[in-house]
Length: 216
Ligand code: SF4
Ligand code: SF4
Image (cartoon, rainbow, N blue to C red; front, side, top):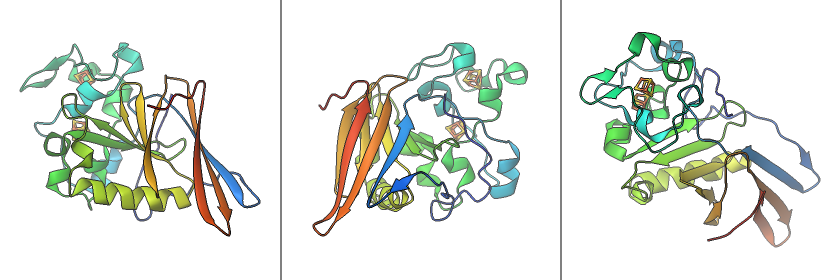
């Protein structure tokens, strides 16, 4: 299960500071696959933005929630259209502590609000991977501008810091790499590894999924 910590300086320019192993001129970047609500401190709202979810309940639909045994992409049984959470006071920690990137990143304008963008973005505290979950019916919303350029630029910067940016639609994960987007099929528990090799010919990025690796 991926978990997040408080993201006080939620800004894609400066939040990533992980430190993974790097051997010689080759290093690997690994993430475990499981789209679940990450846990973040609610204080982050006051610390970073004055935003509130308002009419958005996208994470109640798009993310899986272990405590509720709710799979990703299906509305939570407690969601009440136009009213919010039907068990607000008793909602699980995974819900009460979750904040998407739009809620915490003042650099993301109103058009990045999940209801407008048609995808939810959140950051994992375990590996700091950037996760993009498109709304069902809008699997390619993230490919539209102005989103795609920003996501690609961010992904290129993050991979230098040994962080992965990926878009998840069902079992299909699109990993955004500096030279391409690569789609791999994964299941919960799978691990994506990006092997970065620097040579005189340039930098090469190879993906490995364990188990198993299936390219579309
Ligand atoms: S996706 Fe973000 S803005 Fe929408 S309800 Fe969840 S935390 Fe709030
Ligand atoms: S329990 Fe409430 S906050 Fe959590 S996913 Fe369901 S409706 Fe949303």
